[in-house]
Image (cartoon, rainbow, N blue to C red; front, top):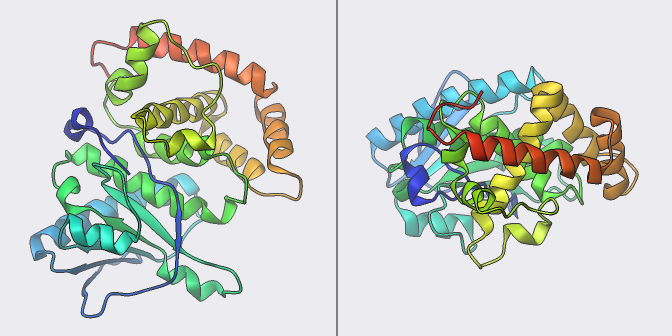
Length: 289
């Protein structure tokens, strides 16, 4: 998850795509085991850093498991590299500036259930330490939601839904106005520029500086769904769209009809109205209603 300078004070607006890697474990890593099936590992990280992450991750994990209502209870590993350079090495790919954490999920082709044990959250300590308490919770809830939803995330699941769900769970209950958490999108809306469509998959990887806005669009699309049918309804919608035998676009159309009684075009019209209302009137820093 990448964070902008404005959101270091409170929350992170941008998530991280799932990264498929081979299972690994760092030799000689320090381990801290909690009572909630959570392991925090660190090699070169201080004991103070590990203790802070263990506390934060325990709170975030309890919250995410509550949202999933007993449907996700896998063991979780959170790894704390020594510094940003080691973070980038662990991730194994170029990452966005200000990226606070990513989820690594092992390749599952031909693998048994034990392979899930290698799935983990990798924290960028240089960014993570600059976040507020709220910001750390948003980041960790976001990444843990990716783990919780992995089994329901089939090929072709739209990225706006994958990242929007994680952002919605991450931000739920955080006392922060929508306009402050969605700074870039709010500026666009106030200038009279509303998105015409949900962001496509490419919008989350472009290098033109618009990625934060795409994540904010995804968040508020999923938040609208949750506001309409509840968090349980959003998760059920996600499962409907993310898995099944039909093609992804057919599943998405069926999900919109079954849960929201509309088409994608109809939902986009509602979403545009929702953005105009929330981002134009929630500008005084009050927590969103």
